[in-house]
Length: 180
Ligand SMILES: *[C@@H]1O[C@H](CO)[C@@H](O)[C@H](O)[C@H]1NC(C)=O
View 1 (tube, protein in one colour):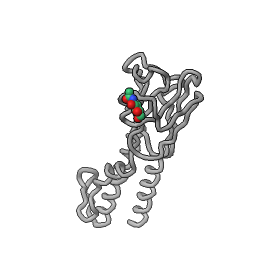
View 2 (cartoon, rainbow, N blue to C red; view 1 turned 60 degrees about the horizontal axis):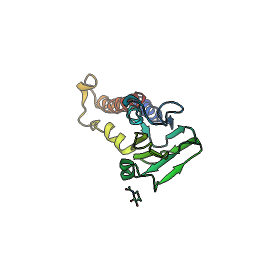
View 3 (cartoon, rainbow, N blue to C red; view 1 turned 180 degrees about the vertical axis):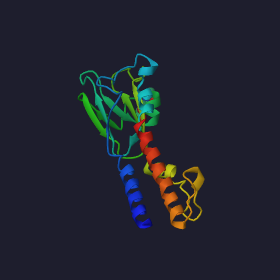
View 4 (tube, rainbow, N blue to C red; view 1 turned 135 degrees about the horizontal axis):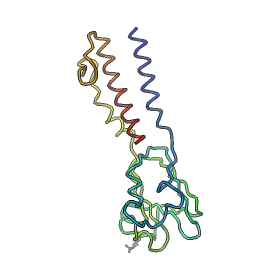
């Protein structure tokens, strides 16, 4: 009995974790949004803060390739809007960059003067380790949490199940958080 429960719970954990399939993020939320923002609400970092980026996701830019480009730069060059030595230069009007590692990515416009006017964006990719840290407060099976999550289970197998439920809840919270 407990064995069946455990495997179905593990399956749930697996399913909710694998919901994090790779996504494409259109920078700015719409085509042509890679431009000098006209208001704070339109700023690209405002957009980035509302999104959740995972390893394996991609950023997509749609812009006028005859007037603009996308430069991936260091933090320092992001802050100072220095376009002279980008890590990568993307041109052509349609750019896709895969987010292969966790941490911050810095992008600025290659159009003269645009970065200074706010055409820049920081994208922070969540690491797997960080995500596991969020989930890990699940208690050890020996001293189950019980009341906070569900009515305290009576048997040993039950408390083990409670621990797994906490993990599932954690995973679901993370999954839901990603949707918001
Ligand atoms: C821009 O970066 C280059 C290369 O890192 C550096 O040589 C140059 O001094 C920088 N320019 C400014 C204005 O900081």
